[in-house]
Amino acid sequence: MSASTSSASASLSVHAQCELRAVIRFLHSRGETPAAIHRQLCTSYGSTSMSIKNVRKWCREFSNGRTNIHDEARSGRPSVSDNLQEQVESELREDRRVTVRELEEKLQIPKSLLHRIISDLGYRKCSARWVPKMLTEDHKRQRIESSREVLELYAEEGAVFLDSIVTGDETWVYHFTPESKQQSMEWRHSFSPQKRKFKVTQSARKIMATVFWDRKGVLLANRDYH
Image 1 (cartoon, rainbow, N blue to C red):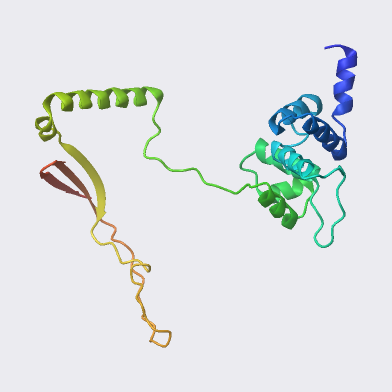
Image 2 (cartoon, rainbow, N blue to C red):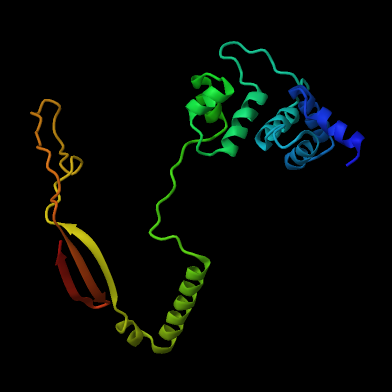
């Protein structure tokens, strides 16, 4: 990269939001799509210059006849600048587990404003989904091959093949599982006496129940005390 190109890239890294909007208005007038405009902005100004969501928003504004590239004065709650939204979104993308308190300390933004920005950006805190097993590519391949083999056997033998399939499973069963508060709910009038329920914990001892069955019914049920 030449010195002139490097200095030009450095100068574009510092910019005003109205400059980006002017570029969007120009490219939009030439028929460029929001995605294409966003790619050009990232190439010239950097990947954190403006999100694709805000590019689409400004394209809609210009399509609806807007010509002003500056923020309009509003009454009531002040608007959140695009630059502030970009800072928050950049931090969220860099660390998906960052807390609002950590963002508050790092960006020096009030917590109430942070919650509003995060909500406007469409983010929400989600937990990972629990699955029984994390299958590798080899596991997936083996399951596909087994499934194909079973389908081929069924195509050849029909119902006779189904009679040869035995399935088994096991689970822990407690000696006593108390009724939950949700299960004890009843329809009553507001003036009816309130029913009381003592809190009971499930039993400490449990049984490992193992069951095998085919398509006609249970073949074997075994229990192991612990």
